[in-house]
Length: 107
Length: 331
Image (cartoon, rainbow over all chains, first blue to last red; front, side):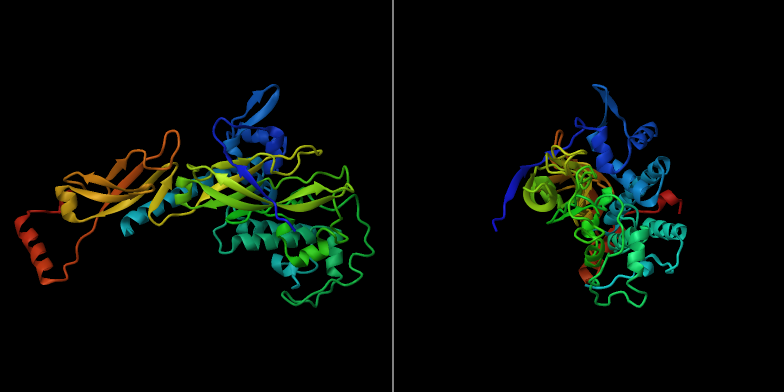
């Protein structure tokens, strides 16, 4: 059997890329009400383009985590947004600890 | 294949109520959720828990599973009985939840989100596609192969600097000549440009699952995860290197060779430098607009006083320098 390999050029998502709300809902397993609630909570800053909601594509990783927490742990949007904030704070502190350990222990 | 004791996985008795089952699932999902957990093998445990709950939360699946009997032990060799699934009326079309469809896997360092495709052979043979519970193909109007447009791809820091290629195995639902939809494997080779940073998204147009209601395929997003590097710490596009210096290099100044992502450079250490001080090599971080910088954090390493000459040199310093490192403490 012939194995076909498709060569693809990756597009790195930047601040200038936007995703439609329907696609965000599908990608992150959240409904549109949750997207609106997350916007109210400041987790994302949507824009209205041609009557449709759009969300910055760079917000996708955060929204994916929020969606996973809501879907898998039964959290509501506020709880998932709070958990996301705390997780990000925790990761930043862990990164800082690693840097300081790197400095004190050296390589 | 090996038998899986779903009740044991969820830590519940066989007669557990639906509410208690849900509670047990929530507790374990919270404990092992890969976005939250620091537990060892969290991802594998989370998949196990999801698989167990997927079966036990559904009354029909749970009843069928219970009919296998309570004498099986986890890990015991198992084959589905020949009359498996008979006697159950399945409501609606193919019994797949939105989360279960259109699985895609990303190989060679990529890691897809969990889906039914990640469940065990035990699950697949009893409840997966082709089983009486799984349905065969996607019936028209029964729903679309949703989600699984997202995967993680691990990248070494050096690859983030120079660019990388990854071969991914994607499983996509496709309609055959007879109109039935099947999962088919596709191999794609992706060129990732230099300058990708931690958490940055890479979009592969048209490589995701079809949009709701059919139509063109959606996009596939890869989330870049830069693997920890033993030498450089990454923050955005900036990297930080801890540079060991001899005491006289810090005190007197020196020209030293410093590693960067693009190769070694010579760097001038100013006289009177102190440990912990950060010097900047502009534009020596990850490429981009603008490129990142490399920060060189100084660390002073003392030579061991393990020879007579070394001890004499330290004694000489002590006698000649009137130096109190604890002056700030007032002692």
